Image (cartoon, rainbow, N blue to C red; front, top):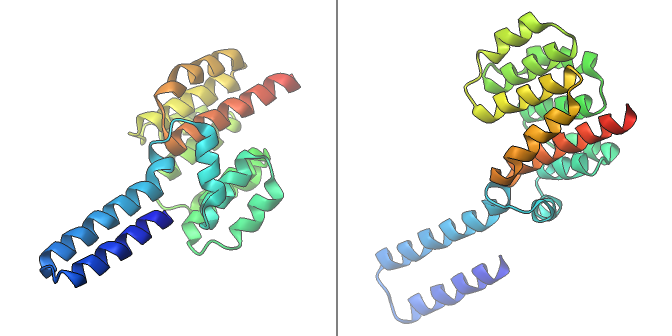
Length: 202
């Protein structure tokens, strides 16, 4: 990342030295911004290796990314500390919901649902909580509102696990994990990790 800034500095100096037209300088800056964004977002969108995604989360200064890093590492105390640093109230609610779910504090998680904005996230989390409380009618109602195939997939995995078919749920995750990238991959790996833990405790 530092090399990109050094390169931009050198190009800017050269542009001034050779008195390049403003349009060329503008194109150079647009290319730089695109490269910067691609490099910054690549691990979270396209990375195939979990360790690389975790490294990127750990290096990030964004408290949301730090939260996800600590959550994956099962360091729930540090994850909770990151919540205090997040300014977006909706982001706090979503991440707090994830934290409570990992701690299996589903009653508290359910109380957060009314504070979520309407949309696929609220429908997904409402369906997941309904499943935990064996409310299959509400589960189906919320599931029907979701158009995102990956979210529907995760609900199917959770449904299998809820019915005691944990091995089948893990197998289902194993089938999709090779095709996932970035944070979607991390979510699937985290789910698999939680299911293996459930198997161990049985």
